[in-house]
Length: 216
Ligand SMILES: N[C@@H](CCC(=O)N[C@@H](CS)C(=O)NCC(=O)O)C(=O)O
Image 1 (cartoon, rainbow, N blue to C red):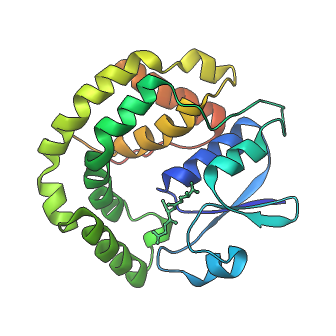
Image 2 (image 1 turned 135 degrees about the vertical axis):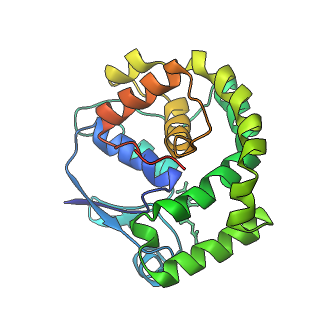
């Protein structure tokens, strides 16, 4: 049985879920706690997720996992590169704002990877250090970050293709955009263009990766 070791909010893990789901492969999801360094090290010699148990061995690196899943199951062809110019511009435009918007909301969401006090403490501390501010401070500055993301959302919207996704045609852009957009949809004050909302629904349906219903 294929197994995916993951966090619910990890965009790299979502990429691999997309590939598994689009190929209609059966797999088991194994959620690790955010402060569990031992299990990944024991399985792969390295910290972190995603980890995929495939063909009798534990593998890491989401791009390599997407490539390894190309042609399996229902035979869809995937590539994790190259990105289009529009997707590359999106990634550069939202870089800092994405983390600042998502981290405090992941803590509010309380996904499986944060379901112990130790995991939540580890997450709050490590992510505050990364942001250079507390999760509460980042949350309070949401308006500023939303203003940074809105033009990037509008710019990328014409480049997503819900119809192609529904036909099982997933591009390298999709493996970047869907995981980030799924997480950004947690932001209550972020108005998603209609085409982005349709795109999220199409990928969720084709790949069996549920969207978050919560908004903060
Ligand atoms: N290059 C890796 C990056 C994976 C990654 O950064 N995973 C994060 C979760 S989103 C992680 O496990 N980080 C370890 C930690 O936060 O301690 C990939 O593409 O698979």
